[in-house]
Image (cartoon, rainbow, N blue to C red; front, side, top):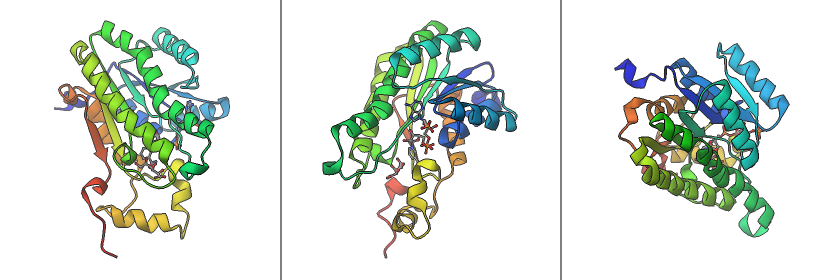
Amino acid sequence: MQELFSLQGKVAWVTGASYGIGFSIASAYARAGATVVFNELNQELLDRGLEAYRSAGIAARGYLCDVTSEEQVNATAARIRQEAGAVDILVNNAGIIKRVPMIEMTAAEFRQVIDVDLNAPFIVAKAVIPGMIKKGGGKIINICSMMSELGRETVSAYAAAKGGLKMLTRNIASEYGAFNIQCNGIGPGYIATPQTAPLRQPGHPFNAFIISKTPAARWGTPEDLQGPALFLASSASDFVNGHVLYVDGGILAYIGKQP
Ligand code: NAP
Ligand code: GCO
């Protein structure tokens, strides 16, 4: 059974993985035997990420790449192919959020979120799928969100992007399933990372709100995502395609604790 979850000999590219959810998933993949590659926007973060992997005993390869740039993504995919091997597993993890009431959000801000959270997963998947087809198959995992299913105030751009990412996941699964490529999503609940730090400030009402909406009565940790991510990257999920696996402590199943 361990073989089923082994990533031995696989090349895994996790985008935006110097820290947070991406770092946690990439670390799990390394422990399962994968060669891990990641990218970051700037050298300082890239160096910090490389140091973090080194400290964890992981020989990750890091590349400077803005995932919204098709030119940079294609060049990075080519370098990965030359230096580590063609990508077997892609995790579209890089993402941003802007919490602004919709009618106060500029069109440029809206476009920026869509660019990183939806256009970029398209660009990166498009860059690696031909290599996966040549290799006889591959795994694509898109990091979706509760906002792939639910809305809330101030996150219109993010919800639109993550809703679209759910459908992009289903479409890649539909279009490339015949090439033994499985494309699935992970929908994390509320996870304690820098992205949600503003919501977890002491006394912030959102903190108690999320606890009341989560049957597990706690924020998730990046480590909570490691098992689901390993499942979707391994042979254990070879007949799972077009699925979004919600790792949310039960939020989507729960009306919320009575006040
Ligand atoms: P995070 O702490 O904000 O990290 C996001 C990562 O993406 C950072 O490394 C960031 O690099 C990178 N990134 C952003 N824009 C990029 C670009 N254009 N090119 C390359 N890298 C870029 O986020 P997180 O909480 O770990 O979340 C990771 C993913 O999970 C995101 O897609 C997020 O939407 C999703 N998610 C998060 C939660 C949660 O509760 N935390 C829940 C559901 C889904 P910089 O530091 O240089 O910006
Ligand atoms: C927010 C949060 C959420 C989480 C995540 C939930 O402001 O509501 O940032 O969007 O990041 O996406 O799954």
